[in-house]
Length: 269
Image 1: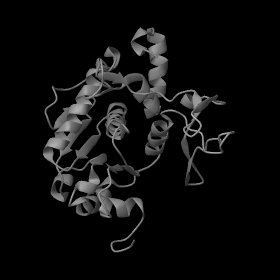
Image 2: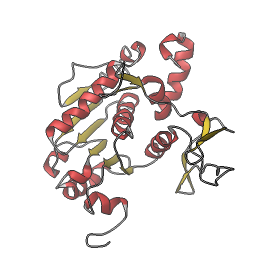
Image 3: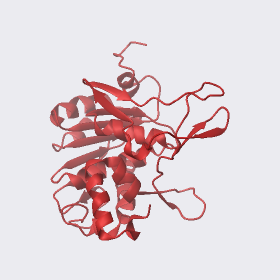
Image 4: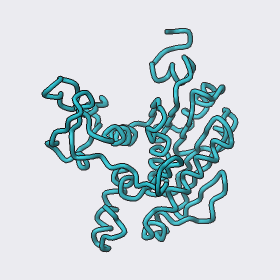
């Protein structure tokens, strides 16, 4: 769907849903930049598809629900639940929905205050988390998001990605002072919105992490930050019950990030 081609009423209806649902916001308004892509490097964020696919049998089947309007994750009596897909009628393996894992990740992130996720190349996970945090800063005024990475240059890359996403927003979002309008041109380390929200990128280390009281904290490549444990211990108490901590990383042995995602104490295997 090309939102810019919709009339004002249709745009307004979608935006009202998008204010409550980050997945709707991201697939309708966000783009990524593929540094290695052929042709246009700017690509719309991939939308979950309306088919089941068996990666073993290489066949597809019609889907029996609307994935766009179906939660892939929810809480039931306080317990996190994730959607289960049907088995392949040929081989019995679980069927997949193309790009469905991204919707599941976003749906889990939305209802989780401490979100930890390992990643690999080409998953679009870093882009996804940048988009999720931009959504939060745009729809919730006066928030401060801090983004930390293993070096200052890597932290600047996160801000650059935010700039790439923002520069391809539909014009009506960029023009709305209550949401996507910028207060000032972004720097390499900061992004300011007219609604009072701000994104600030910082390098690794607990001192950097606690230099401001923030609403949400994104730790990118957490497994490669030598002081990740100290930063985590300092940041999480400052977030209180409503702040959000997000940690993503490729794995790097059995270090602090690995212990967190596997619920292990230091020394346990």
